Image (tube, rainbow, N blue to C red; front, top):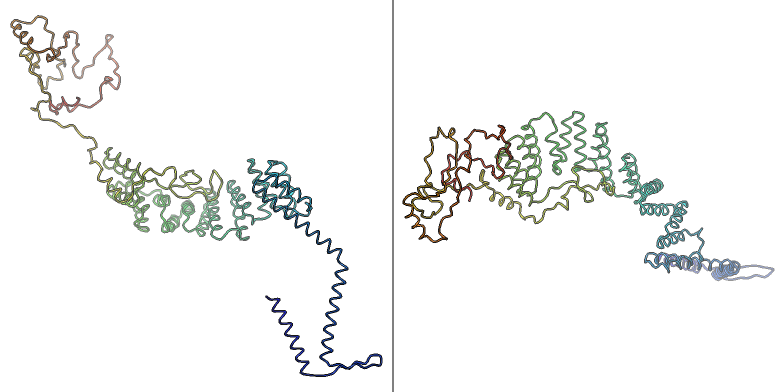
Length: 589
């Protein structure tokens, strides 16, 4: 379009020029060798322009004839080069698709059409063909040759890095990545690998320098660079926390400037200020990030920042955090734990129940179980809250690549990825069917909560005059034989030995027993009571209470199970005197 516009402007200029000459007529007189030539000025100008065009055409023809050999050579050379590039392109496509036969054919054709010293793409094709064939030694030699060429150095280092990672040579891979990052910090793969290596080795200064180079080269965007730099600064602050708290606080505050809601940086800055004895600045940093988003670890450090505080003082600090972020699950949990430590069970229970209504998580129900155990000690209610915790959603923690950590770390120990840890619920610990609805979840748990002391039902005590068993009618003689002897007075119970009342076997019935036998003969065999024959002299008398039974050698025998017999259930029956006789019979059916 521009060329057409320029051509139109030139034609218009010529037209205006001829029009200007036509409006001003004149004659041109030329005397040459005694002859005079006269012509109008317009005609003379047209002849001059035509002569110029003829000269230009003649010059072009002479130049084309003169340079024709070189032009023919250049044409065939360009045609050959184009065929070579086409062979390289087809060969790379064949390698990518796995067509090894086509790739080899195109590699041979590329070598025939192009010079390997002048065209580095041939080395790329050869290296890819060698990798496809499985000839890794040849591929490494080609990558080494490419790394020595300034034009293909980055590509060669990339190939050597990938080969070292493939065979598990991590040190060699780190060497090639750092070499590439030093030459070209804009290479994303080299910068990432080098950054992870320096992070694992604790070379935080070198890592920060590399991030600054990437930021200057505009390899990463502003947000990504700020995020990674805040992580590296926090890690360096953590490493300086014990030796140089002042420098650690400076690094942590710089990290907070890049990410104002980064809780690990705030925690390290607060610890650094506490190491310097500056409680006010420590509390200010924690309050700043708490206003952004409450975090359990931040709240725990804030509540226990001052070591000499009592439990009541810690509760006041927890309530201050709740005032900064009211109606928040984390704030309620912090206050509930502090109230439990201060033995204010009513407040702890109210806050824990409110937290469970917001988010019915495991920690909320476990805290309710702790409150129940500390206040009432009722194990039934404690087990009830622990059962609710098992059915609830798990609490978030620091997770990276499937690994769970109690504390934040700057990189993943598995893959070495920087800033891999995130605060979330572990996938493997997500509970089964989590019930929907936070408020209804707690309300149902409160409705099913057993009363205090009612976790185990006591057996009902029947009336003393109510018969427990419907006994069969017995003959008068047996009824008299089974009539128990009158009990001794209460004050003489300890002195009189306890002996079991065993009915002796009647070998010779007394007089008048024939009538009883005749009555027994009328009873069917299946309805006759079972009589166990035993001799009273075979049953040893039971020793009196408080006495120690001795063996033959005069020493007291050893009793297993703490002085009980093995079949003794160990139930304390010290209050048996207050239990009606009928209830005693129903203790064990």
